[in-house]
Length: 512
Ligand SMILES: [Zn+2]
Image (cartoon, rainbow, N blue to C red):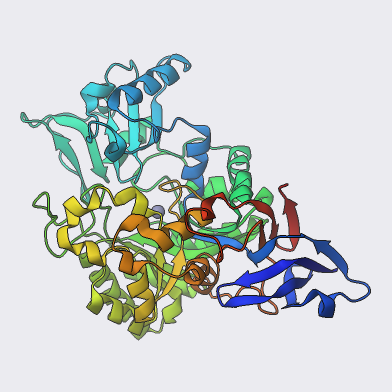
């Protein structure tokens, strides 16, 4: 059935295209003026005073960890270690004895003490406790959890990870990267035991921030470097009822898992699709694990460079399955090494736009030029700026000018797909757009225009999935209806702009 969706204007990253969008079922027929497009037999859906934009999209999202953040204990609002302990004690008092307590989203940089807790801080809780840092690359276990996992002074650091130790060499509870898995295999990880109903009920409120679709990072088995049940299964089980479209990048070390994931997603029903493979080449700035060419400014490490042993086989399998290759790279060394891999894949025959780098956070001019020449996509998260900005200069020093440098990336000719890395950051694309525009004062020359900010969360996400330009004829009928034109709104006001409705696959979800 043909419907004409009308408002004050239809706004895209390339300008105002009219005031009406004609759709037929799940795709766009034409955008233009209401007077030209409203013909007999076409039903009008009017939104007086509103602005229609292409359906806002997120290029990097963790739906199972978001579900855990919505339904489980999170510590993001704790302002000191006493708050953390009080929240753990309160939750523990509601739980049956003996069951492990897993909590998420601790941000030590927001704590008064500016440090992670150790096992001793968490030992007031009389059960195994595992507490994840907001980045997911670090966790802290209490003594009961370490004991349950058999961790003691003689436990060696695993490949790709480490256990922090006290002066006597005893693990102090802080676990980095793959070391988390030693403990989470007995306590469970962040996304454990999620019911499909919990996943769907966590995704539904995303309409309220204007989101119509996610590019999801989902582990084939358990959470990356954590034990527990399959993240992919949680998404597959919820797929038929998903209120947002989801393109799934699968995190795994085994090529055959990709084949199986592609089949399971194809059979899952709902607006959920296989998108390719996601791999890691380094860690995070927050954990001092992002791989740098020169040491961090505050401690003498260069982070941790790592790629799965079968990374080339994984990439080729994803491409053979008509998918894409997404590789996490934050530090400049990781960026360089991943670009080397992209070169090899293009030589092998990969279409460059099927290669994407997740975060691409620290790049100098030479890296950016090389990136643009290869023609890969940068999946970036502007909301990292307000979160990491306060503490990042002490870690990067004068490299700050090249971190999250969105305008320089655009100038170099790189396509940016905007995302939140939610639940690392809040899921609002309007918040992300505001951060790209005002940058919290960090290297203001890297502020992008209002149009480009909108483009990151619309056209860029579509380009990263090989789709045609949003709202062009034949494109998916995916719309966000806003109370104001986001391009004409200041960055300060942007996050508060009301969302009147979203359209997903040609179906309206009205919000007011
Ligand atoms: Zn992520």
